[in-house]
Image 1 (spheres, helix red, strand yellow):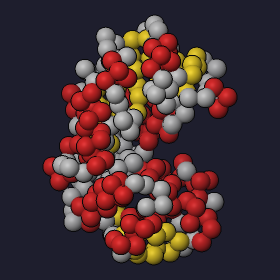
Image 2 (tube, rainbow, N blue to C red):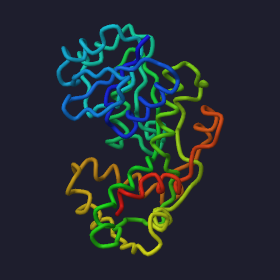
Image 3 (cartoon, rainbow, N blue to C red):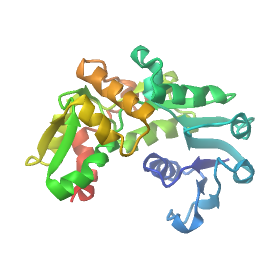
Length: 268
């Protein structure tokens, strides 16, 4: 049966499409705008949007399995469209599993989305390596990265590995650990990540007050506090590295250095 990938143009969704095709699975891709869809010829493409439930119902016709990102908000009407499917795999957040993140806006948002579904298999990455793309503009223009708690240690995971875990869940080949906390192979500081991107790059340390202003250009005040909470916890040793990816995939997840090589052009 065909799998619907909602958000097929996203960094994780695009890899899910590729993994499914490699496995010989028929794929339907859902995009918000058809004219922006550049996908393999083997993929059927439909236009749908969770904000328009009627388009989602049409996209789900003949579908047995779905991959989707956790939306910022999910209504009961939107969630109801996915009832009765064989599998719904949701890209959530590992923060829902951290006791220290209780009450954190980002963690609670993802927890609420998970709970809105009647049945769902959540994939819970804690720190995405692709977060480093937020540094690309200042790297290209100034050769500098501005960081709060630059020595905070996390275990960032490549989006390709997240997609591989999600695909295992879709195919039913994943172990029972598939919804456990998902990370990259080892802890690495933000400062070390910058050095991996470019040895000559300069790190400019921000105070938390300065970071609020810095993040506040793009995020709500509530989300800024949530981000600062995660980074502060990481600086205090509260961001672990786990074996979930290795246990699900039967191989270690790739190192941050490989992610950098894959994205070298984004920083030039």
